[in-house]
Structures are given as C-alpha cells and as structure tokens.
Image (cartoon, rainbow, N blue to C red; front, side, top):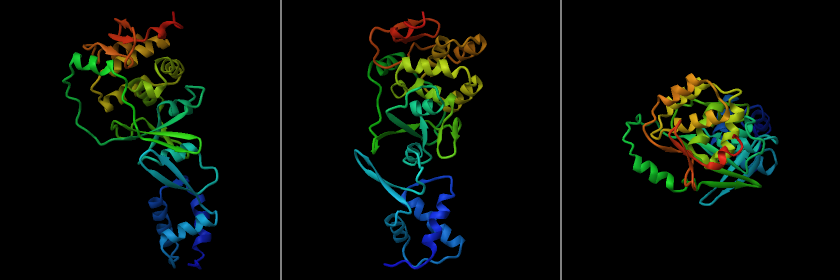
Length: 290
C-alpha cells in the first residue's frame, strides 16, 4: 500500500521531540494514533502499516532483543537512544538497579557486564513477623536464587528483576531513563548481594556512598519496603565497616531489631561472626580494613 498522507513526514519529527525514544510496538502505535487525532490528520492505512513504512524508510529503527523464552521488538525514534533507556523499556515502569545503578551513581568504576532492570511488584500487606532462626539459617546455607529472565541485544546483557513495592520511593528519573537512588541502591545490593557484585564490591559501594547518601532516606525506604528478613543488620554492618561513624544512627539501626542471627551473603564458607551486628560475614572482607 502506498501511503499518501503527510503524516509519515510529520511523525518522525514529532517523535524525536519526546524525551522517550525506545518503545514497544503497542506504545508507539498508540503514540501515532494520538498524534494523528491531535493534528486532525486522518489515516489512510492501519497504524501498523504506518509504523512499518517508517521502519522501512529508516525513519524509525526496529531492534530485536532476544531472551531464552521470548524475543521482543523495540522501536527507536532517535539515533542516540542509549542501552540504558532500551533496558528500562523491557519492564513496565522499569528502572536501572543494583550494579547498573551503582555505576551511573559513580559508586563503582567498572561498567557491569549485566544490566539489571527492576520493576516494583504489587503492594502487599506489612510484614507480620513470624521469622524462625532455623529458616533463616537454611535459606542462607543455599546459593542466592537468581532470576532466569535474561535478555540480550548486540553485546548488551539484561536481567529483569522484580522488586518490593515502595510506591516509587527511591526511584529517580533522569532525562532518558529511571534508576534507583543511591540509598535504594545501597539497600538493594545488601539484600541481593549477587546482583551487587558480592560483599567486597558492595563494601566499596558503601565506602563511596557515605560521602553523599542520606541516612534518613535509608530509614524511610526500609520502612516502606518492610522486609521480612533483618536486612538492616547487613546495612549497619556495611556502614560500620565502610567508616560511617554516626553512632546515633547506627544505634537506631540496631534498635530496629537484633533478635536473629543474620548473614551478609548466601552460602559462605567459614564465615566470621560480628557480635556488634549479630551477623556472619566473609572473612576476606576484613583483610583490607584491619
């Protein structure tokens, strides 16, 4: 079908003015329909035909991101669309998290080989306790469970994750993508150490973060996230070892509860015990600190 309407000349210029530049097929088709109505320019073909025409003419770029179970198409409206924006488009309200967020915040120097993208789950009822020491011990004797939602585009590897609901707290919006704040990143890597590069890398993240982070935001996020496990013990341990010396705030973390012996990482070999935080940690963590 030959498309006669000038809409196809207007659309790429319009799309290039929008802050977002990576779209699913459904989202970009909706944009095309909304724009046509707004400028009162009627269609002479189906929306999908307009889209394919612009792809064929090189006005919009179509890419395919492959996963183990499915592949998805994304449509790029600008030539400078970054891999981070493309990554965030893979999840509803997706945001960069863990090491990817730490890299953007300049808390790690090396760009991660895998870009983690999280999306918040549904709101749930507050944690009602019910922890048992035996269950904590059993959970951390095993390796951390890892997401199998891996995707790849060109030389870029993406990992899709689900995070706890916090109503968007601790998620920042940059020009072209969203990412977890410094404080939420600090919490995320302590909760899922494998996605944070392991305890040694996480400790380095904390050492850099204590120059700029807000302990008040840490407390607010922990309250919103309402974890069942006592991750505040991990956070307090990292802060102490990283050189954070506000004893009043550290004591506030302890007062959140020290009733359970906890673990800094999963499946540790011959760990060391910290009585200060009632937590086991890898012995190589203290090699460079004492």
